[in-house]
Length: 239
Image 1 (spheres, rainbow, N blue to C red):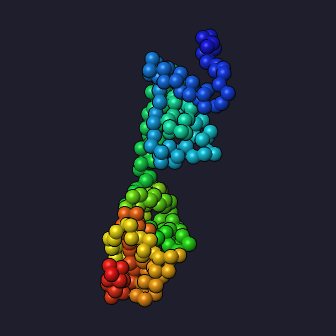
Image 2: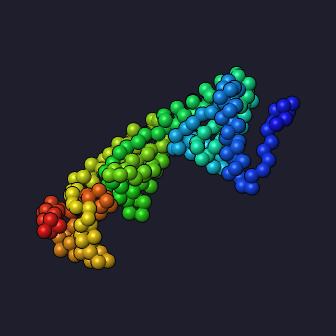
Image 3: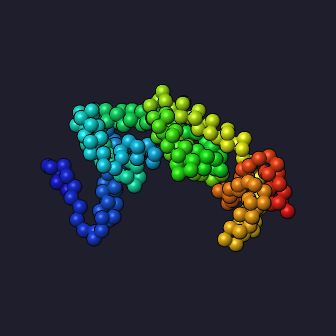
């Protein structure tokens, strides 16, 4: 510890993890005893990665330092925490700037929840549909798969977000008109698929439809086709 220089030097520990843990402990102590000069700002993973993308972090931190009159910033990507150091006014200004960055992100993002089975329709063959969505709306579309549903995360100018959400909604509505979900015993998934997919291919060929088991873990499959073909397929599966 060098009191005059205001630095702490770490010795020992053969790996980076040991020194990293020690640094974290020191930062926690400083933040506890001197909260006005040493602070931390935690962000959700999606906000952190969008605000501090790899390869652009240096420029963003330099901009933040300038906007906060010289505060020092250090990122912890593992915990998505930004450590802030400086005098009381610098740290206070830095925290305001970080909050404004997070608010700006939220203004530029809209989430649309869709059925897991509809992901294929939104993406399109070879990504054709989602590429067209991007070109038409000038927004970025990411698919986040969950348990039983998926989220389409739309990122772009605030005035374009609703247009992107409406476009996704139209695709999903059309998908629902042409597709029917059916519940089944998840343990029967292997029977429906058959050896090397033989059974499901026969079901599709015999009934003139498409069967999607994208959500088989939850016991839900999707049948795509004309109304009579869908009913025949449902009856065959139940049998």
